[in-house]
Length: 404
Ligand code: PLP
Image (cartoon, rainbow, N blue to C red; front, side, top):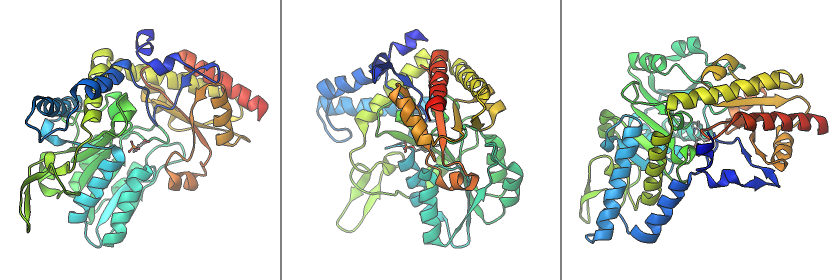
């Protein structure tokens, strides 16, 4: 574990003169030195645009970019042509809603989302549904963070065109029974799109093992740079989804009156792509693959969830919101509240002691309003977190409860 922590320069620093306890990994993760070095090295010694140049620097940049695509594909068990680089999960989800959705959703169609969806899923599909006069229906979520599978079955019908859901909820940490949901969607002829922002970073996704038409994730949540993400499209979707934005790089041939486009994935990557970020993401994925046994990593994260949940259970004013049993077996985040203490005040006081957690509605306002959970505090773990981090958080919470 120390070997891993020492790879992350920022984890060696202090915050307000306290050792940094970084527990906001579901928002974004820290970067290992190898990723920082890769970015510096590429900008300093190899930089040129991809795709067009016929000089050695440009050819090298193109080769590195396409190699990054192959690395990203291998990370989720896909083929390189299935990988579209985006700026992140939000961008990928907008491409699905406005690209695929715009072409295939019609008035009266139904789109199924879970109530816990992140705003990055909620807003694009809401916007599309309003434009198309389609209807969004929501799978209810119970107050303990469990999904209402029985209601989901009842919601599915011949009008259901697509089911879009988070693999792991960023609010509760719940992992869904993905194949069950996918198969039931397929049984009514619906497409199945996955928000894998909270699962791919933990090595939970191999597209060979799941039935999924498309999925999105973000590089910055898995040790990669900001501004890079992946939209995975299976072969059928690549053909049935029109490009959502148009421009250079995707063109096969253009005239003053019309143009034809290159096949996927380049058809979906108009403009100069975020190629340095993609190379940085590939460095992050290679780092993770070489350094981490994902099964062990998930067991260790669940152990940290368990330690936190048990510690909070000893504090009468603390309440965990989420599927405790599942989190202790396979979780990587714990959301909780402290009675009588506004979440933002608690997070600010913890921050003053060097402890970084998230507070608020966790980008899921409708769910927070429905369940009265506006004041959640979330601690989320990644490869470098230790039992000491949890203990320092628990001590910090005790201090919060004394002071506030
Ligand atoms: N989906 C989930 C479940 C998330 O947790 C997040 C980020 O917190 C996103 C989507 C959006 O990711 P990004 O901001 O990188 O586009």
